[in-house]
Image 1 (cartoon, rainbow, N blue to C red):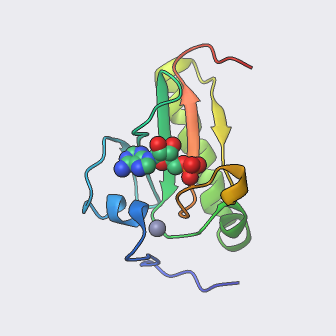
Image 2: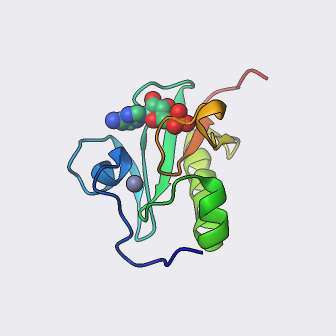
Image 3: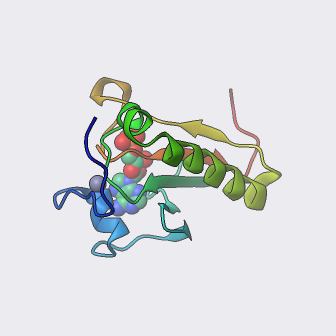
Length: 118
Ligand code: AMP
Ligand code: ZN
């Protein structure tokens, strides 16, 4: 278990820089715990990334060290989908390089806003 602090960030991390406002993003939602912004390369009509403000490398790391925040990410996804598409959404956590993870700050892909292909 790694220690969780209020300022658990990585200065070299793209998403930590986005959360800090050092790199611009199209913000959809923010509170004390999570930041949500539009994916730069959308795979659905609405494609939002929901990230915890604290840096965890992937969803397994988050589940082990801060499960409440993982639940909050799911609740945030639900809220985004209620606004965009009567609460229906697909939630994806690519975990590890060979599963397609390219940014190693845990992020939920929320796909919604239209009927999704299987
Ligand atoms: P993954 O491949 O699961 O790690 O997802 C990383 C996602 O981040 C991809 O869908 C990218 O399109 C997205 N992405 C990368 N850079 C940015 C950025 N500056 N702003 C918004 N989304 C980004
Ligand atoms: Zn980070």
